[in-house]
Length: 303
Image (cartoon, rainbow, N blue to C red; front, top):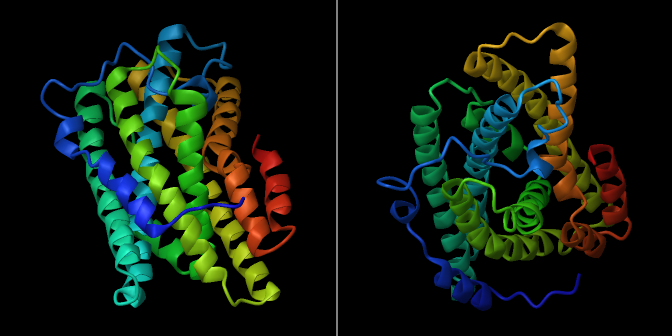
């Protein structure tokens, strides 16, 4: 991917977005629990034919809660990483400094938004839906890796977000409008974050040997494996939440089918859709020929 991203251009585009948390949630801006929250390509609930339509809608909403909570979770490590990346360059390029600090500010805003969403969801849904964590422990595990590994993982997340909204959410007119509004506004700012993180990856790769870049890519894959284990844990939490919310106790066969289908959906949502994104693949190819192709091949296991 040949890009024309500049810190000045990214900053200008970011300033046009500029929404406030208070504009998106609270007051009369309420979730409609009579509707689906996530498109089927991400939720993967319709394949569970042994569930009733109402049960599939409930499961879709549980997945919607987990989806936004997962973004809140990963942004807990994105925020300190961006701050650490910005600090050494404070005196070098004013546009770079302002763009990166705005990136960090927007990630903090997203974390705040998703915490408020969680409160609204719990009040309206009426049943506890646990999520993996705590975020600080997950952030600490991810941030132990090489900064280039972490930057690649963040780039994966940013392009993944773009893909989800553009390919699945934007044109699905049956989703709850309030939930869709949160995704739309999150997407608008993440569009600039993906460009900024592309520049971060290229900067962190500059001057490294092929062996050092290979090691960093291995670190990125290790982060993916760590998150994959978390997704498996989230599926178990979702099964428990579903049974509490519906009062239906799944037998062993149904629970196995539920778990298999939901793990597949979670893996595509958070792993496959990012690893196979053309812009991630092309950036990896740019820093290490063959690396993007390799990662895209691995992504097939999550399709």
